[in-house]
Length: 268
Image (spheres, rainbow, N blue to C red):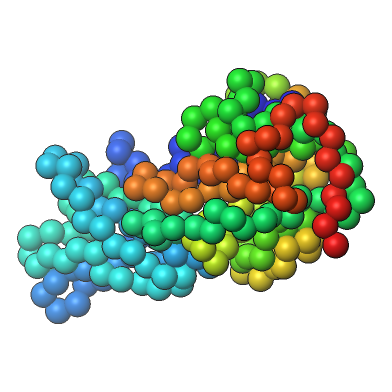
């Protein structure tokens, strides 16, 4: 069974260090004539929303970007500011998806994330007291899978993040950053995440469009976990990042799946 591993660390996709004011990867500066511009560059294959938070007043400036879009967030006369002073004044945060979040298809039936005929044991359900607590993990499911077993996409989507280089596993929180994973973006502004993948076990790469039931990765034994398994969750954007949401899997409401349930993939 796995302790929940927070892959996008504290739900936020990116942040600027409050200690050394490092420029985050989605922020650039441009000097043009008498002005300096703060530009956000979305390198993702999904929407990104960005906040510039004044460290002193806490006032927020907000920008929504489409996939691969860039936009000016702030501008100053270059006689009054430079990149270092701007980074000292503002904290920059970036989050997956579109916000404000409008709605999602609550009736969509996700396919189970394994191949037809495959049988798996549920080892932790929603709100599991072992590790499925907190907004990021509460509505996630853990499925027992052997190392090397095939994981499939639970829904049509675009691969937006892959972390696959690790080959470490441990039973303490020290290992949480070593869990390989893949994240997909879906048409209704939701995301799915597949965690504890085998090292270099991805069968799809960032930018790929995949179909439900298409093989996307191999199950592994990486990160903060006690046995090989797949940690699976569906997420929606909020003002402070992604939160897990309840869904229907293979016609079964996820909230009904409990530890010890045996599932067989039946969808054609």
